[in-house]
Amino acid sequence: MNFYEHTVIAKQNLSQKDVDAIETKYQEIINKNSGKVLKIEKWGLLNFKRKIKNYTKGYFLHFKLKGDNKTLDEIKSKTKLDSNIVRFLTVRYKNLDLKTEYFSKNKS
Image 1: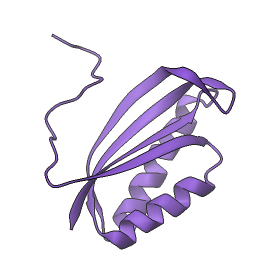
Image 2: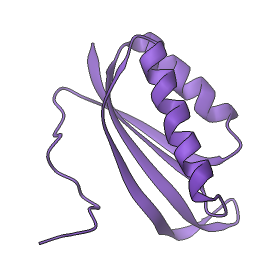
Image 3: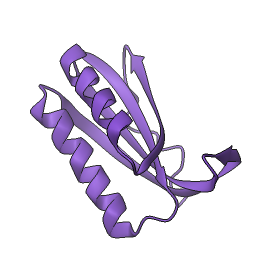
Image 4: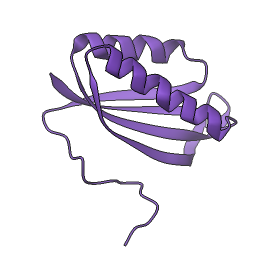
């Protein structure tokens, strides 16, 4: 089992209910395909530096997970077909930092 970070950017015009549905959908995909979600970070609605597919903002969801190639292939195939996702990125790690949240709302 390897560790991954999977970040998806959803369209800016989605309601909070739709964003929660996307989070639930990908969490179920990971858990059903011999993976395990370790942490989910909701980074919220953030501005893009440049337009992406005529969007200037997007909802960022960041999943920290443990899985194998089957899990990763299923996530990628489902994300490519999802019309509510603008971009996504998956990165493999040897160890995950589960304590640090880079976009937390209450920075001290």
